[in-house]
Image (cartoon, rainbow, N blue to C red; front, side, top):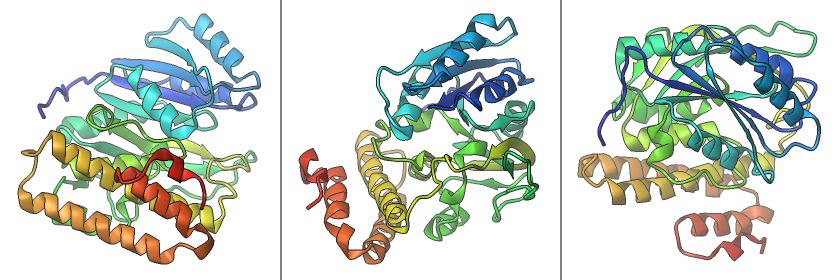
Amino acid sequence: MSSFLSVTSPKISLVLLAFNQESLVRESIDSILSQDYENLEILLSDDCSTDKTYELMSEAYNSYSGPHRLLLNRNDCNMGIGPHVHYAGSLTSGDYIVMAAGDDISLPGRVSHSVDVLRREGELGCVIGRYHPFTDTFNDAGDWQPKHSKDGYVLRGGSEDWFELFSRGKLVGTPGAVAMWNRKLFSLFGPIPEGVIAEDVVLANRCLIAGLGAGFTVNKFVLYRQHAKNICAGVSRSDFEGQVFFTRALAMSDLRSFRKKYPDQHTPGYWKKIEMMIEGALYRSIIQIRKPYIGWFKSRLLFLLGLRPLRCFISD
């Protein structure tokens, strides 16, 4: 893989993803249109909303006269978060991609602070900042930041720290709400499958597989709105276990396809180490899942590994 990144002024694509968020999306749109980074394109992407979300996006698109290149998209059908993330990314052209939710507020320096990390460290798989969670009444819950990081900390791809954090599940705890992702994580891998709601976990796993690093900053990127309609709100224990299992199975699938296309990207020892780590995570998930869901989980795993057809996604 060759590097294509200009770290002095890389082109960044900021994508606003929304679905049925008519009461909140305008504030989110205004926040991303107010970004202070110059080399920026912005995509407003609606996942076939049934309310006025797309109308509000269209109004903002048609009335915008600012410095950034603005794009507009409406999906023909509701894709769900995983496929929508991947498809929206394919409509952009930036070296790095920032995914913003239609109910969050991006602070003006979100993109520029991310690029500052690249200027200091060079090409990375992702850059992670902080967010401030709030409710509609702006209850102050303090800022979130990765517990394993500090400002200026860089987790290099293939380092022992990287493997250690991945094995303890700490790396994938990084929320996509404050992440900027290298385009390679989209272009070098297949689409994110339907049913995935933890797309940030998938992309973090791809950083590991591709041998790319992660940079951290204490700069605050987002005001993260917490409400009953958040994607992860109300997720049951069983559904959560299913998502963990599915993303780990997808990591194994991504590993196999990436190694087939780029066998010389890593040493045999590195490939083996990643494979053993993902296998171990899969086995832990199988042990933890509840009995009524075992058949469904096995079907998804086998499908992702290419051993059974798609019809096996149907519950046993």
